[in-house]
Image (cartoon, rainbow, N blue to C red; front, side, top):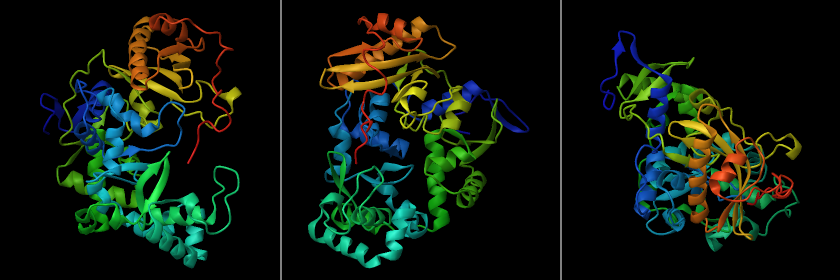
Length: 432
């Protein structure tokens, strides 16, 4: 297969070591190339196209998660470049349910029309209910968007007022979310992270909407191939998870791609399930041992927790919704990729009022010396602080890596009681 010259294959097929598989996955995700000296909008667009999907999440204790993948791969950049892809003409990115709420290349709009058509059956329960029991209300909300869009859900004065609580949506909010899920409205832009909705014909390029809708099987085959190219090497579950595809449609797509030579079945050391290698997967060459990368919890390299544990040996869980006394590693914890290994995890907070990037906990993973990890991590934290226009990095003495990191960062260690993991407040930065 192209890109895999030099691999020895026995009659049973290609066999890869765990390290080779890890290198393929890291390179496929865009971490094997050098960061450019300057990052323009074209580079950010190319990255989104390479990944196929960038997950959006509302937590803002550090920086919105969809801004992180470009920083992790390309280095410091102007986040306006990413916003411009979905907010300005010509639009090259749109929002929809890809992995979760996601940014997707506009060319993929046609590949998700089946999901839009199935909204009455697959959308969240409270969204399906309003479409079922109040169809006229949904039509009224659509008429308001047509008349007044771009418009936020809170500006639509219909139905019961929203009650306090994260999931206590008003009828208008539920209706607009159903219209979004079913593709009848889309995001025109965001206002302080709130979606402003409008009709697709006023937002998306005409040629995107005019593109023929593929058959269901063809759409799944294309989505699986995009996932396979972005992942490099993956199990069936990995491929399905990338765009949240159901087994009944994903499995025939995988079989068809194997038969077409797009995917090849391979064995990976330590993996208990069959793996699939994309024909354009990068060769499993050496990854730069000094490449230091902070990863968003929602980065596509690590968002599948079982894959992360299988590939990197790190059992990684997001503890945002875990009560503070029961948290093990912290509130908003980022894995730290160093070379081809996850060697640490840090609980970060951007204290914008104080001008500080706060490391509220730093935990070491076995395998690489603490001093080496701390030095590399300190450099990456300094780069992140500059990117976020923060003046300094402050390290709290919590976690077995904290002392070494504080020394490497050349900042005074603060007492553990000074800044506690969880001091973000009860809302945790969750806003819609």
